[in-house]
Image 1 (cartoon, rainbow, N blue to C red):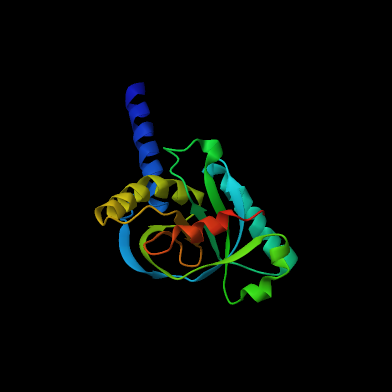
Image 2: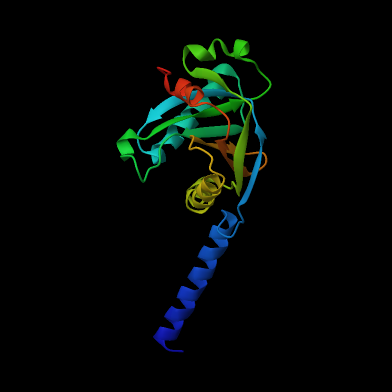
Length: 196
């Protein structure tokens, strides 16, 4: 076998391996979009201004702080993303990121609220898209696969634009992309008013 044949086989094997790896993270996953009531969610979060790609360390730090210093274990993280990165400069993108706390009330989190914002995301009728969550690569893939379909669905139904919540559900290994249909803009603005 000549050198070109060997190189072709190596390239073919490399492509197959890459496709297998990417399929684990959702490359071939179908996007399911539905409308249903979601929430309420009890959120512990920090406000973030800047490139969305930099929110993961903020979320991770908050998660470990809750676990190590407050003995609160969470299995769901979230990001509430306000701006379209194709329309807003990266250094001006607005988001709030953190953890969803289950089995506690706001009163249970008074000590946590000294350091972090604590607020309830109300129950709302929402457009929800689901995508597999197998790691950070799934988040990146979801941006390219889910948002175009989600935006097309929202536009087709003539729903207004609202911030999109990405809910990272580790036990169920899925990301839910949530766009509220009936929450007022003031509610979303209240999340951003935090000084934490």
